[in-house]
Structures are given as structure tokens and as C-alpha cells.
Image (cartoon, rainbow, N blue to C red; front, side):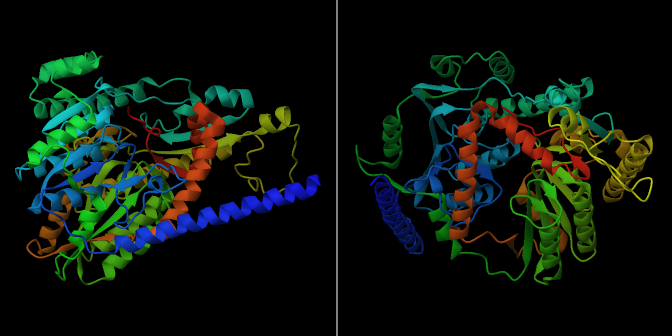
Length: 586
């Protein structure tokens, strides 16, 4: 009976699951069908930018679905910077849109991306339309973005962070000692500190210096922008920020960081007032996807194209999703190169670097494309190490003032796991070989001096190649490049001063430069490579990834970041061109 009961329970469970799945799928299809209907923007409409809990990436599909809005799902949704900027631009031009309601207190994005979006909001205000910001909680980045609004409101029992930025690094030396794993590092450049977490238990003096310099540069830039938007004396704003004087909500109000401590219903009443609506009247709203869909039919029909190739993530060899894979990237570059309607190429780089070999493969593709048409590099949040390597061939390099770039250096990493295998796991090995170096770089023993010499020579040759690529691309001598290399990281402002960047600006600036160099500045349209996945394929991929991530987070709790860092070690294959570490700036 117990067996039959269990079988019956399984059958009922499967039946219930099937019914629920049917309704979910039916809902998705209904949403898809409705998304194809014609968009009509009513009079007195407000564009709602709800970025709370969203992760800003370079670009998403304009027909993308947000998993967090579907029954039974709760994923972290992403939104494209390109999509957001397009929506804001369309809202500025459309006479039926009167303003923007911004909810971005807890948005997740880097400083450069937030600045680029912030500049678009400021440009929107030139249309004479309003921007109202409200949030229950403002993070440092969320407030930086939201401070561009005409009025900023905070929930009376909420909170805000305006106390500067910090970057914390996890060090694995103690863990490896306990596991009896010996990391062996090969590098060039005193600032090439990507390997420090494996060797030290704290930052080196060189790494602390470079991190302090560019963090202060980024923070000073953000504080100056906030002071300007909020009409606060710059020195006073720096004092408020450095001493965290806005410790209570009442402090934020008294210091003019916010305009009021209001509930959301009060903010909506304010919006009604600005729209000339009666109390409790419905507010006509439109979101990013819908306003961009309305703009689809109004695209410029120019035959001249500026191709923007999105290069976001770690640099790896081959073909893969969610990274900059050399095979996939070269395919897109060659596609743009061969297309006669594409007059210039903009490479939008948002990468901490990665494989040296993959970077060289991509560099070659861009160098060849440069012989046919102009190449412009637009640096996003970061374009460091390998990210700078693939930017070097560009005719012009454009970066934001708070872009993290440089890190022109190289390293290799190898692990001796003999102690772990023998003393912890009870495993031993033996080998038969035909030549002295047939078991070159075996992880089951210490490296010989010959092996170390060979590896180090390869690293030094790779560094020399990197320096040469930059010198040729930037029309600098190798000595001039060496003076700003050694793996040191720079802000966009510093990089421009050092000759590593030509222009401070965003993607639009890069596109305009590309069009001008191609001689089509009066007649062109922008196309993006690679093509985004269909919404259903993207939804299934996101669902799978989200389930895996949430499972690991639930199991590991506060130890998940450590696990994630250890997982990233798998990517450190071969010779690497990479940033000092995974920067988490808070």
C-alpha cells in the first residue's frame, strides 16, 4: 500500500506540474502575442524606468522577457544600457511623453555605465520635461544615477548610502596552505597583481597604491557630479561623502541630498500634479520595451551602417556565451568588414581581460579590418589587460572618465598539487617519459628550474608583444608604453593624460567619430553585432542559469562569493592578460 501511495503521489505531482506548466506557457504565449500589437503612446504619458534590483548590461533584446515578472520565477533581471538610452532619447522627442519616473535606488551597474546613463538623463531634461526619482533605499551607485533627477525622494523609513566607494579582495593563500597546494606565478610588471590573491594574505604596496589612486579618482568624479546636480558646494559634498554625514534620513534631507522623505503614493500625487491630473486619476505610463517598440517603425532607412560590436565579459578562446570568445568575435568582425554597407566599426569593450592567445587572435582580426574601414574603440565599465589589447588597433579610443583601463601586463599561473594528493588524499603518481620535458608542467610535482625558465621566457615574450601592439596602435615608442604599463590600472581620466585614450565620452561619441571618419556623418544608421537571442531561447537559458545560481547561493550562503572566486580560477588557463582581480566597487 505504501508503494502504491508513493506512486500515486508521484503521478499526482506530475499532473499538477503539467497543469501549472501549461498555464505558465499559455501566459508566456499571451504576453508574446500582446507584445506584437501596435504601440500607441497616449497623451500625458510618463516613461517608467524601474531599475530596482536590475543589472545593467551592454544590450538586451528589445523583445526580452523579465523572468522576475513571470509566475514562479524570481530571477535577477538584466536591462541593456543601449535599450535604456534609446528609450530615454525617444521619450525626449515624443510630445506625448511628459516626464520620467525613475526608480533606480538599488540598481546594479558599474560607475562608467551609470555615468553614461546619467548623461542621457541630463540630456533628457534639456527637452523641458521632468524627471522624478523615488526609492526606498539608495545605494552609492543608485544615488549617483538618481541625483540627475529634478527631484529625489526617499521613503521616510528607508535609507541611503553616500559614503564613498571601496573595493575588497578575497585572498586564498591560507586556503592553499591548508590544502597543501603550491601556486607558482610567472609575471611581468610590478603592478600586475591579478595573482596576488594566490600568493599573499593582503594587498602589496604597489597594488594598494594603484587601487587607492583610481578609486579616489572615480569617487571624486561621482561626488563632483552629485554636487553639481544637487547644487551643493563641492567641498561640502566631499565632506558629506568622506565622513558619511547622511547617517539618518533626516540628515539626507537637511544636507539637500534628497528633496523629501515621502511615500510612493505622495510621489505619484506629485506626478499627477505635474501632469495636471485630478487626485487619484490614472497615470498613463510606458516602459522601456514598449517605447522602443514604437520607435522601431521610425528607424532611419539609410544604406550606410555603423556596426557596433559588443565585446562584454572575460576573453576566452573558441566559441561560448556570456564571454568574449575569440572565434565568435572574429566572425562578427569579418562579417562587418565584408559588408559593403558597413562604413565603420565601433568595438564596444567591457572586459577585464583574459586569455592572451584569444586577445591576439581578436587583435589580428581588427588589425586586418582596419585596412578596409575605420575602427573605433568605445570603452565601457572596464577595458583592461586583454580588454585594452583588443582596443589597441583602433584609430581612436573613447573612454568614460570613470572607465577602468590599462593594466598592460601579463601573467601565468600554475599549481603544484603534490601535497594535496599525497598528504590529504593519499594519492601518488609515477611516470615514464621519452624526453627530459615530456611531462612539462605536471601538476603532481614541483617545477624544475628549466621548466620555470621556459615559462618565464614565454611570459616575457608575451609582454613584449603586448607592448609592441600598444606602441604600434597608439603611435608611441615602446619606452613610452612601458612607462605607463607594468600592469598598472588607470581611470579613464588618467589614461587620457597618459596617451592610452584619445577622447572622453560614451558610445554615441564613438559612433559619431566613426561616422565622421567614414565620411557618412550626415546619413547613417547604427546596427549591433552579435544578434541577440530570440526571447524564448533567452528565457530558457536565463531560467537554467538562475536555478543553478540560486541553488548554490542557498547552499553556501555568505560563502558563495568565495566559491565563485574559486570557480573563476578555472578560467586562468595559459598566459593571461587580466585585471588585478575581480573588482567589486561598493
